[in-house]
Image 1: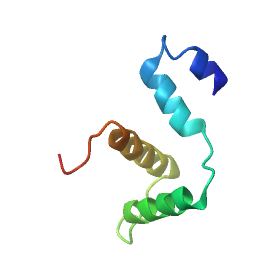
Image 2: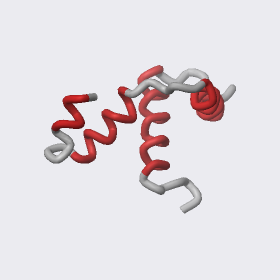
Image 3: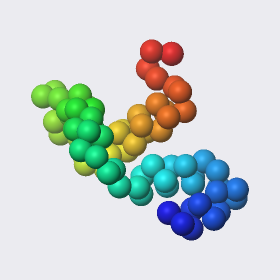
Image 4: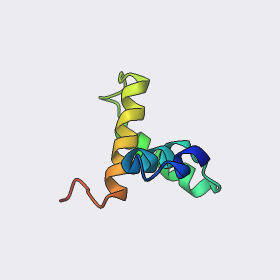
Length: 73
């Protein structure tokens, strides 16, 4: 995280993504929200998704929400 902070001017978008991906949540509320979002992604009809596909989907959703982009827009 310190490296990305030091190089955020060189890689502004990547440093934001690295911060989101590499940081550890300090509360269980965020963890519970993550499991709730994951449960909406992995449903009975979508239960054969590759773990990397699920991870990428959840990360992308998180990054889009942080940018103010949601499926309702």
